[in-house]
Image (cartoon, rainbow, N blue to C red):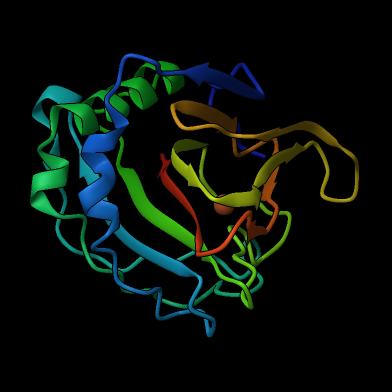
Length: 212
Ligand SMILES: [Fe+2]
């Protein structure tokens, strides 16, 4: 396997306590349903960016595609998601998240495309929300970063990392708002367990997933 030299870790976990995560709330209320799954538990947008975080440029609109080798459910499908909203992408707090991803992964932002998925998983009384319906998987990138923005009224969503898809997890944690895990996607596999509402009403989990 062609492993870039700058990946010298399996995963890193960090808490970003300085950020006002509530500023992201309105943009998660406005997410379209993911049209590529039958159930209605996932809402998402996707955009690609390049450049240093202080001068981040959105790349032209393009579909998102993974190979069938890494995604059993949607591999080989050109998935066309709505773009992240401009106001969101221009927030200083959003740029801080991107900067953290760049710092942590040590990618060169001038030459490396960063894919950013904005995802809300919803669980209802009769609907389990599946953050990873494809099961234990890799995304087919060098790095995958998961930023937890919100957990509300839910049970579950434990993020697992594996050295092998058939082995035991080497990391298992319910990511809390403000927590960020960066994963070496060349080396590890990841999965997040399903969610159920903890009380009455819907359960909600909001994340940004970044890939490079
Ligand atoms: Fe993934």
